[in-house]
Length: 396
Image (cartoon, rainbow, N blue to C red; front, top):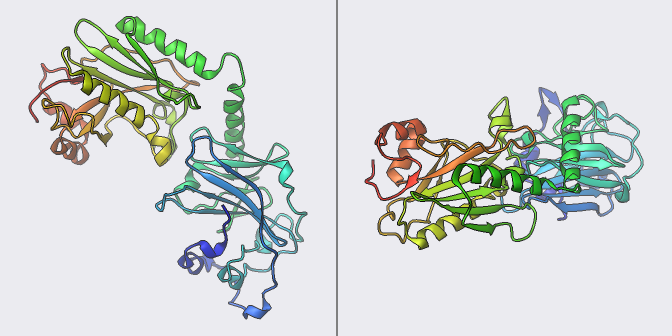
């Protein structure tokens, strides 16, 4: 992934002529006054373990940058984070350089080292991806050099850089962001745990199976839904005398992206597992399609850098070939719906795990949920009908 400023929207360059009222860019110098820069060299390049972000460190003979992007996502910001000037900083960022596609040097007022520093050595660098899949830290000799946190991926904030001071449109100083260091330490612990015995997956697998079987009895079928690759996860089927259950385990090993942007305390909302319940006599083809559907949706938050929670709806095609259920085109996710078995998923790294039951709904019912929240749907549902059970019913 070779990137240049020239690949960015030219409107972005025009929009950043000032930051908080300060003039940031020099006037457009004549092109012949721009020194020739060497072709940028890629020092480090990597795709996140979640497969949703790409990061690259580039350096020419003037400046080094960290670039982060979400492939195929035009709705997310292309992140360009200044890392280091290799020579004396200019008074202001040079607009002409940017218009020529050159990565800009940071202005002197925001440089911790105004005279520049030595070039970065790629062999001393590595990426540390955040468990949520919506941020990354760049480490030099194991210490944070730069951080693109979750709130930078979906907004205009550039990220934090160790060699910067204060705030600019190219970077903010890392030293002032003390809470970031806690996040970095937590990410290190998260990934180190996967090298321990037993692994987080082994602990999760045993704990969830024990809880599911405590409440519902022994499972009938066990399906690996991870393709034998990280992140490990599975789905079980449990047949009882009055219902058929589908339950996932392992999705909650990863905290979801972006939850902290909406909840002050994210610990109750960033982890989940799926559940579905069919009435006896349900068609096997429909049960199989639903199992495949839940497996596919288990990656949705990380692929889309979003999150799922109580009251959310998602399109669902699992019922389209079932004559009794084909009018259901989506599912409503409900945490602990009335009438559902009492299941208490184990906590993961201290976080509560939501057990989101997939409730089939029509398109009209989905609009009701979107417009008036899930409580409006639950209130309209017949009191004597098990809300969590997938079965033939008239639309509300």
